Image 1 (cartoon, helix red, strand yellow):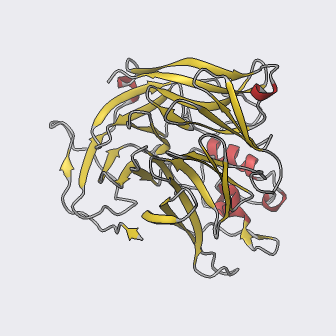
Image 2: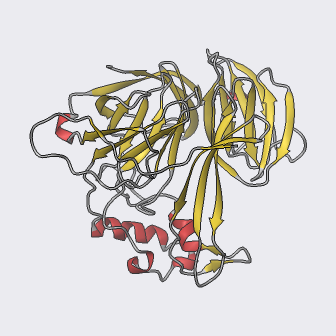
Image 3: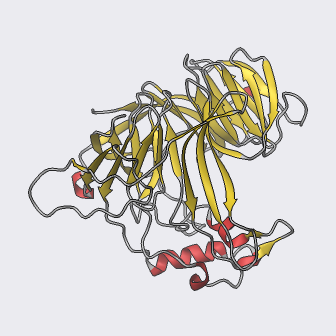
Length: 405
């Protein structure tokens, strides 16, 4: 197993224009491998983004159709293969629907059950150069050939999440407790990002990062899970430290903790970048909205904001993606656009700030985009699932990105 070890690099390459006060950069939240090129960029203000835009055009919409193969129920992931065929993982119907590049139904993989080739609570989907890989039943991998033949099921020793297919196998994140699981001292959690063969064998490790222990307000059942920490991972303001990663088809992994605006590339390309992004203070209103959401579960009914240890500032990165050309999309956290909203208020569809970098870390674009992310990409297209408000139907959409760079 090949492990890429990280140490602090002392040589930083300035990539911002001269003149004016120097931007202030936060300390690295993930150490930088020695000898790796480091890019530093100033933040691009909101008023300078208004006239720069990546247009998003709907190219194909599947769903809201009488055809049962197009009537989706809780589509979880939408991923293309190299030929443009579209794979839709439906968590509700516990199956994978396959369509060709024109949207014509091809076949169904899986179906409800726990037998060979059947799916129970599927949550992850990856398409490699020769396999369709689905994680289901918490720790089981189901695999098919691209022609639809069931290739086998594998029982995993640990849960895998964040599956992303590439030309050679797939990338996934595994989690483990670091330290003893005792009442007085909750352990940290270690996230390890690794490359796996299509049969679930771990091939190499990209990086491992530790998330600090969560606040402890109580425990759930015999598993002694720290329910405050578990609930706080579901979104909103907390936690500040949140692992996010994206993978290109050539196997480059991009990793951030999202706390600070910092990005690390592992694999065939090795670089790191950071942006002097100002992190806005978390307002009292945001805290109250978040607390109202968290008090709904019974264990947190009497919790206070002091119990949960809210951060002083919002995180810096809201999302991370790679498009079909290998460009890296970073979605900065930008209140009030990403601030928590009361549950009875529908968010309007708004443009989001986005920064785009080349596969080598060169800054290509800063502006706005109407998408906040996607689950698959190929060439000019990205793929995603959505709930259409007008019809209340689940849809699968292929968008064309019109990139001005």
